[in-house]
Structure formats: structure tokens, C-alpha cells
Amino acid sequence: MITLAGVCGGYGGLDILSAFELNVEPGTINCIIGPNGAGKSTVLKTVSGILRPRLGSIVVNGLDLVGKSPAEIVKFGVVQVPQRHGLFAGLTVRQNVMMGAYVARASKKRLDARYDELAGMFPIIGKRASHRAGGLSGGQRRMVEFARAMMLEPQVVLLDEPTLGLDPLSRGVIYESTRAMNEAGVTVLMVEQNVRFGLSLADTVTVMSAGRVVLTGTASEIERHPDLMGLFFGLAPETDQVAE
Amino acid sequence: MAALIQTLVFGLLIGGVYALMSTGLTLVFGVMKIVNMAQGAFLILSAYLTYSLWTYAGIDPLIGAFIVAPVMGLLGVILYKGIIERAQRIDAGLAIVATFALALILEAVTALIWGPEPATTTPDYFNQAVHIGSIAIPKAQLYACIFAVVITAGLAFIIKRTWLGHAITAASENPEGARLIGVEPARVGTWIFAISIATTAFGGAALSFLYQFVPDSQDGWIGLTLSVVILGGLGSIPGVVAGGLVLGVAEALTSNYVSVQWSTAVPFILILVVLTVRPQGLFALHSREDVSS
Ligand SMILES: Nc1ncnc2c1ncn2[C@@H]1O[C@H](COP(=O)(O)OP(=O)(O)O)[C@@H](O)[C@H]1O
Ligand SMILES: [Mg+2]
Figure 1: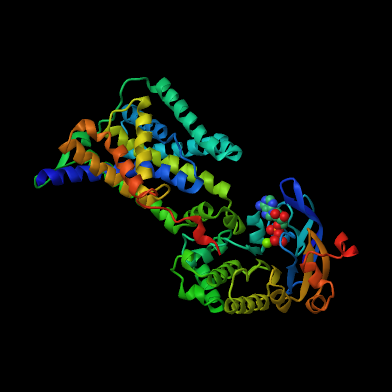
Figure 2 (figure 1 turned 120 degrees about the vertical axis):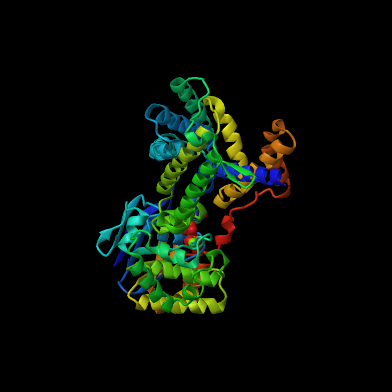
């Protein structure tokens, strides 16, 4: 479904990702974990077309996304919810969600129907439709971002640290919503700082450090892996520090 | 009392026209963070084009504006793609310097084509008035103001209600977030420039029958439109309406009750006062910090 092979790239001259590899099966939830600055967000931005990789291929459902514009990628059904600043404060909740269909600009009737459907899944967009998005709490904003990502019935949703800065209650809502999106047929590729949360949701987990994959496996394999905690203190097995 | 009402009516009408002349400037600033120093030059160029349609084809300025608007819009796209966008890629400040250079070039070009003689259009309504009781409303100002209301409302409609308008808001508030949903800020920028420069056709048409103008009138008009935009709050459309009306009324009151000489100083005194009390202008745009999550 999603295959990244030999992806190298970053911002400007410097490579952040070096020969990054990833495989996500259709209909599953994959979670990328790794220390701060490992390049997790960079992976997602490269898939969504915000960054263009220097080398490598990114194939989703048979189509190579490298070189495609973010708009073409959204149209193809791959949508990213960014780590921060996803919404437009000056637009209402409804307008924000509708912007998820910007690349299609379908008939108003169809979009209205889709909106009502999504309001069943994310009640906040029904209750606060005409509120300015700027006035929502962190958890509510996430729900609006999720709803917007779902507007065009995507194949893949990329979630960048969806629980960042949220209280436990909102984290629970994110958990349920991510499950619901997945059950609606969406393949989820997410990034999480909160390892417990990531492992509890994911089918497969990719552990990355310094722009490379260090471990991949099912969530339960990773959970029982002896090196995992070490990795989170920056002591990846392949680094020199382990030698002592 | 009647004299006061008369003065206020006059001030409000002219204020509406000031708002119309300034909408393009505030739009470009709000979305692209560029102060278009060529706004006055675009207004004067539009006024001359309207003037030529009037003198050579007998086309009324208010109708001529609709012919001039697409031409100006196209010119806006060409100048944006050819100069402004490239300058902006090098440095945001350079784009502003480029618009300043553009103003000087446009001034020279209008001088070459139309010469230094003062021009003005004189449609038959330019010196007529409608009377309501003892109040006389000059038709020229009235029509220009109605024009201003229609065009500004049209722009507000585009911004508030259309896909393009929402894309404009999205791209100006949060360019990276906009890209993630498939809105390309660069493409939105082209639209903004096209729309803003096209609106100078309407401001320029009003200018053509309300005032006499020469090529270097542009520096007076950039001063005035900048004043309106700063007063109203940079980037805000309701702001230019408020800024225009406040300025129009203040000027009318000054020239009627103080002296005509002082009325040209009014915008600058007002700006000093407003910026001292409310540095963000009358209407401030919401800041980007609002979106952090
Ligand atoms: N816009 C940017 N320009 C240049 N370097 C960046 C940019 N964003 C992130 N980086 C760098 O790329 C590396 C990986 O960042 P990121 O992918 O955001 O890490 P993570 O999401 O894993 O915390 C970091 O070293 C960071 O400093
Ligand atoms: Mg990150």
C-alpha cells in the first residue's frame, strides 16, 4: 500500500532522511516512533509532497508520488494532519472542514451531505459549525483537522503527533477517532512521541533514529524488545555509545 | 445644523471613494505582506485609461472601468510573475522596493503617453447634484460612492463566500497548512495581485471625474491610500472602509470649519493620533498565534 524505498532528502542541502525504508499494509495503522529530531515529521512531509526527496521512491497504491504536487497527492487520497498549525483561525469550523475538499470543489449538495456524515463521526463539527476555528481547544482542533482530512474519503491519512499537548481525556477521543477512521477503510501512518499511545493503536511500528529505520515489527514485538527504552534515550544499538 | 449634515454627507461619500481606492493595497498587504508602493501609480494609470476611453470613444468612466479592470488585472499578473514574485523570492523587503521602482516607471510611462497637461473626465453628472431638503448631494461623489460600495461588497463576498476567498484566507494565515490541503500560496498570490490591481480600475475611474490629475499625482495618492490602510489596520477590508470614512469626514470637517489648507494635513495628523492610541489600526487582523495547537 505505502512503500518508501531508499528515500533520502531533507531541507535544502542537508539530508535528514538517509535511505529510509517503510512498508505499510493496506487498512492497517502504522506508527513511527523515535527521539525528537529523528526525522519523523520529515517522513510525513515527504510523503505529502511538502518536501521533495533527493533520491528514492514513495509508492502508494501503485502510484509513485515523488515529484507530484501536494494538491495532486491530496487529490489522489493521501492527506496529512500536521503536527501544529493545521487550521485557519479566520475561517469557521465548517469552512475549515470544507477546505478539505478544496482540490475537488464538488457540488455543494454532495459536500453538505459528506459534512453531515462526518458530524456523526466527529460531533464537534456539528455542534460548533459556525464558530471560528481560532477559539477551539487543542483537542477540538484535532477533531476538526481529522474531519477535514476525511472530507474526500482518503485512502491514507498521515497523522503527525496527534496527541501532542493534549490531556488524557482528549487523548482517549483521539484514540477512538483514529480507530474509527481506520475502520472506515483508511490506512493510517502516524507519528507519536507518546510511545504507549502509539503502541496501543498501531498494528505495526517503525522505530527511527537519525533519519534511518532502526527497528520494525508488530506493536507487540516492539513492546517486548529489550533495546526499545535504550533507543529512547538516544542509545541506538548501531551508535558507538553502546560499545562501553 | 444643515451645514454640518452637508459636510458629513460630503465627507462620507468621499470616504467611500477613499476606501475603494485603498482596497487593493490592503488586500496585497494582508495576503502577501507586500506594501504595494505602486498603488497610486496604478490608480493614475487607470484614470488615464478611463480618460482615453472617455475622450476618444465617449465611454462613461463608470462603464469604462469595467473595460479597464481586466486590462489592469492582466498587467497585475504580468508584473507579479515577472518582477514582484522573483524579488520576493530573494527578499521580502526587495519586493517592496520593486513596487516603488514600478511606481516611478509607471509614472514615466504615463507622462510619455499622456503628457504633463492636467486631465479629467467630465461626464454630464460631474457637476450636478441631487437635493434632499436643503442638503445638496453632488452626483459625482454619490455615484462614485455607490460604485465603491458595490465593488467593496463584491470583494468582501469573494473573500467570505467563495473557494478562492477561503483559499486566500488560508494561504495568508498559514501557508504550510494551506499547502497540505492543496492550496498553493504562489497561485493564490497571482490571483490576489490580479484582483487588487483590477480594483484600481474602479478607483481610477472615480478619480478621473472627481479630480484633475497629472502623471505625478500618483505620489499624492499613494500617500492617501497608505494612510487609509494604516488607519484601518493593515490587511483588513472592513478596516479600509472605516479608515476611508474616518479620513473623508475628517477632511471635510477640516476644510469646512478650519481651512482648506489644513485638510491635506489631516490624514497624517489622524495617523499619528491613531497609531499612538492603537498601533494596530482600527481593525487589526487576528494574529497567526491564534492557530497554534
Ligand atoms: N523547516 C526546516 N528546515 C530545516 N531543518 C529542519 C526543518 N524542520 C526540521 N528540520 C530538521 O530536521 C530534523 C528532523 O526534524 P523532524 O522531522 O521535525 O523531527 P521529528 O519530527 O522526528 O521530531 C531536525 O534536525 C530538524 O532540526
Ligand atoms: Mg515532528
